[in-house]
Length: 150
Ligand SMILES: C[S@@+](CC[C@H](N)C(=O)[O-])C[C@H]1O[C@@H](n2cnc3c(N)ncnc32)[C@H](O)[C@@H]1O
Image (cartoon, rainbow, N blue to C red):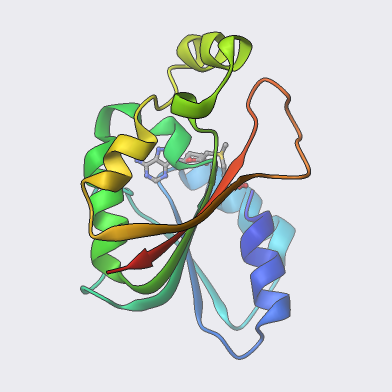
């Protein structure tokens, strides 16, 4: 939990970084792992209704969080697009690009099946998309999707 947030906070010590998760338990794990980092805020929040102003972040990312938002994927993507003012990076499995084994796994988990379609409904354009080199779970492979606000 929070591994990318931790890496970003080390790499960009002058940036103000905000992480969100709907689960208090998951946030507690992330906070524990992260230790005290003055440039990081971790807030309990629903990705479906972000409590931030429009265009309030230079950079927005999600790592295997959108995968769990099948029921609300259009709204979650719309919220990411709304709060972003520059780049967005998603590190997520993409059902639309997956092979049979990953599709079956994804269905069993109840994961998102229409991430690319949801992206197309926003004002985000795809700059780059590639399968991540390091894969932790071969049945749930991450694709890196770099997006830019139009
Ligand atoms: C597989 S974990 C990934 C966590 C983290 N992004 C990481 O890379 O370590 C998926 C996370 O998505 C969170 N999540 C699921 N639905 C959410 C929602 N509607 N809003 C915010 N977070 C949500 C879960 O609580 C869970 O912590």
